[in-house]
Picture (cartoon, rainbow, N blue to C red):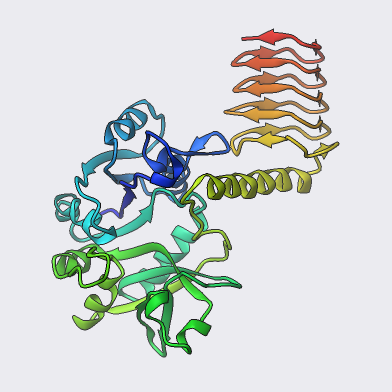
Length: 337
């Protein structure tokens, strides 16, 4: 049975003050949900179930228009009663895939990546684990669940408020991502109890329940320091955008692309820039834009899903979904679509 994914995208995100689900809030112009789905596709996992909730019709609308390799179904979480409750809504989806492994991801944690997904699955299978938790090590773990390691794996996850002083010194945290043996997850899913102050069903409780049934649990430490990051409000979303923007620009700097100034510069993660090109300040490159070799993209230019031929100059112009021939000069102040 092929491996599959459940993405939790039922959050309302009241502090976002949005009339759409939080997972559809954008980082570098793409919904956070898209970042998560595309990471799964890049890892070769295309069987996906999205758990929707608040204004779930927007999730359906987005997914129906999406182009990609994934085969995606949705289930509805009518009440927001915790992460465990969200996964319960996908029980029929899991039963139909019994015999494989299930990855559970958060739809509002956009920086999960292919290497983390694949590396955690490799550890999960090699150790014949019932569950493998994706973790990260951070300088200030305040507020995060701590991973308790043993000689043979992990014994569980302790939420920050429940940690002993000694446990609060642990800096390995739960990212909210898990690989489960699908049958092991099904065996304990209905045993989760809302025995906490919030009256919610926590997916983290599955870890100890699986261990109690004699299955092994382990943790995979991601090399990605941002794997656990999410956003609860607009300030947090801005921070995610800043992180993503700097990471993408840094990648192109390492590739030898010249940025005269990064103030106001935004480069989408699917953009391609040719060697020898120069990007000036206040430039936005988005969508599937391709900038050829030895191009000059001047201040104030906006280019979305367009192709700019080698050796072209674009000055303070807006170009959308069109091809610009090599050695062209566009602008200043032109609009092309």
